[in-house]
Length: 349
Image (cartoon, rainbow, N blue to C red; front, side, top):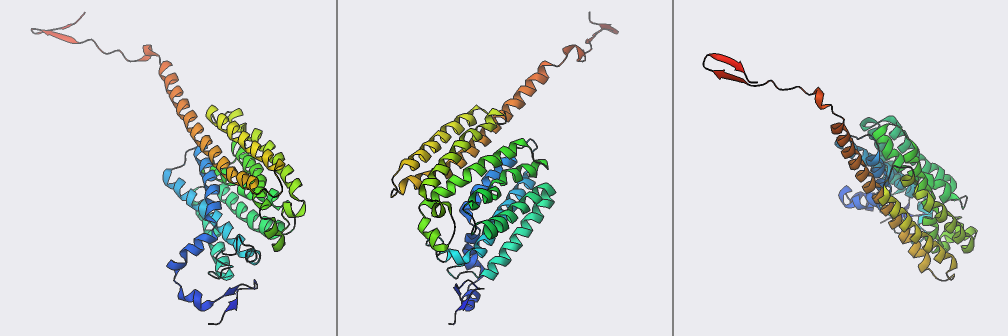
């Protein structure tokens, strides 16, 4: 069987092999292109933004909106893998992805990513509003063009700037319900924006050799381990007080504040531990990376639960106030019953 190179990447790909495999058997490969693990966390934060918005979206439209956001996030992942197929092939962590392994060609990935992204934006515009659709389109564009194509191979600040794309989902979810953006979704954006650099730098500390081999200017390969751990600590120190803003500004309850402070303290402790750990100790970076995922998930779960409790309490208080403010004197007084005595009708006194 003759093998061909897929569109300039140097990655072998067999057309006969591709043709012989049906869509059903290749479906897992297309799903893998969407980076489902990364996508799920982004979609969850979008769902929280949708659910805590002051305007309630119809349940069916809400489900359609979440599916559209999921498709949009997946499209960004597909297009990222399409462009990065050459460097994925030389890194152990990514060498088994569908394109480097020859399961899907770059042409197929490009067509799939563009189609999925356009469909996601169009569906979201029809189901909700143009503002939400525009934010989704901008997020896809920023992740693919600004981060993947422009920044990733040029500057060690790629994660800092490119992290804006991953911080947009809560704003998109909020906009689906309200048709606009405000202070609350911007703060959620800021939390994820500050969370992104220490999360990915903790991963890159243990992958520095692979990034160096692939020619990527990640912070540990350019500035070294010491500078990276100091910046991780700085961003974590900024993140913890920022994460309490939803409670401080009143759109999350005390439960959220307790969770934000408690989990933030652990995050800071892990960042400090990473800074003082030995150079050969990979466990500290891995612990911080793993906990950072748990941290963001728990933070948004607490926000959702706290907001729901606040909304129920507000509704109950409004109902009590309405009842207490009713003027009983304004209620109609029932007529006194009439009493029949023989053929005489007398009004009871």
